[in-house]
Image (cartoon, rainbow, N blue to C red):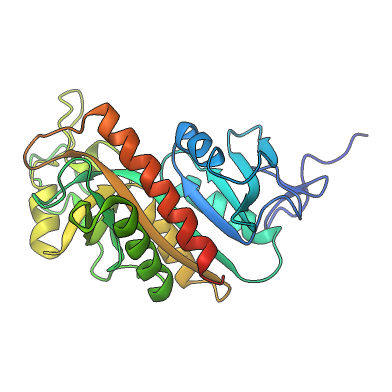
Length: 281
């Protein structure tokens, strides 16, 4: 009989001493983790590290780079998209790392206030709320009331870490290009973010206005930050902060120029690496 597919069916599963989804073993991920959604952004940040270091892409598509920045150990993990993917990253890196940890997410987002212009970086010092499709709603009724749920209370970041991220961003991009504001994390790119798809009954025409009416400080929308901040708040050994580059503004319809986005992405990467390595986990 061969070895079991993995160990521990009711905890964090291991396969030959490695967490099942990220593929990591102890010693392969640092106590400071920069989380990004896309592999291209992870590769960009890897190029900012002191040396190439450790690299692993798991069978489930998670890529981890571990090296140092300014001599301080740090990992960059490409999570992919959505809250469940972030859940894998936070729980499985925690499972194979000893001691306190800090996470900073550097993502991309849509602007849901006019202040969040394309190319601006939103630092979520107030934290993030969550927006989800209400699966108990009758989407065949023609009544959109109650089709989406918005959390009342934001998940908050670690104060000193969030302040360090915001300050470092302002130092790299200039204060005019950094907006400290609340984020909203949606359960998808489409329905819960109010995008129109005529192939489906989504009843989402009022979701953005309802979000802004409920949370006047909200300026950005993406899919992962709430999960990271919520999990960190539920773990005594993790602190976290989040930020994201605005790719498009949902209110004005303006979209960032590709070169401007890449420049903001790189400058933000430098800022995040400076911040996370300057603050103790």
